[in-house]
Length: 337
Image 1 (cartoon, one colour):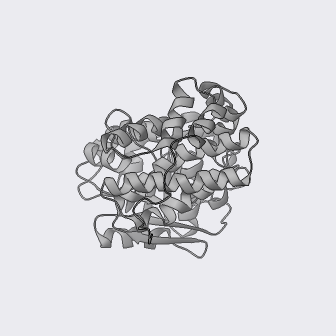
Image 2: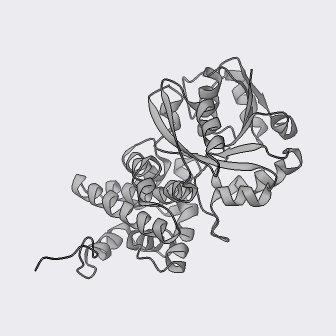
Image 3: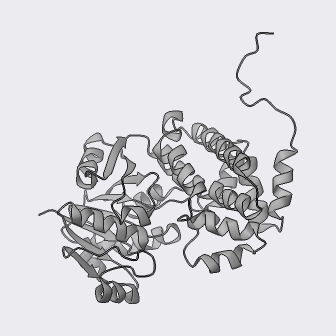
């Protein structure tokens, strides 16, 4: 039986652990939080985050990082984005040469503007690092609701290896060499989802939400192309697909935080109310810095930053977006007359 470990026992790590255990693997689920492991050992489920999703017997729970990293076919790094660097650094002494690690977190580091895969590669140069992303709420994956994602890797053989481990009749996995676009789509959709939540919090309708999603993917695509990504990937599962699900679902912590901000909560109060890491807040500044670095127009990203960090109301941000200079939807298209 192949051995797979997950570093991070939050809702996403736990949901993927259940998926892998159902696929017949010997699974180790690690957390740095002893209280989290104790809860999982006691109830065999994440009673607060994933109620009703029982852990199969072939999932072992531990706070021993060395044991979680030793002799594993695959290591899944499933911690929230602010903790990716510290967790990778802590695990480094226990990671063997050539170890395959797949990152399933989503974010960009504000100080360095590095993607999570780049951070892991920097901290674990001895490993081979891939990414798994797509429209995949943990609440649904844990209940075996049909879900589709994409794995990005530098080598096709690595992507196919991860594909084979994860894939089953309810969890379909595609593969791609376009790691850059997969990571950007996963990180930036969280920022747009904050804006989508604000739209709902303000009481606006379907027209507004559809416009936000459409113009949001346009902004993500502009930046992705400037950074060497591919339009097809950004219009695929890890770009448009993930954007749609995160902007429209009550499972989304980013949408829910944005909703509260639209209702008048401060960013800090909204994050406290959601009680989970709101990834979009941590990626928003980095996204705007990347837009400036690559000289890409990203007005939604700019306005989200203004609301989060500079005291602008969500209603004022909406008016600013709607009243910008008149432009063509796609300036590169040619007129016949």
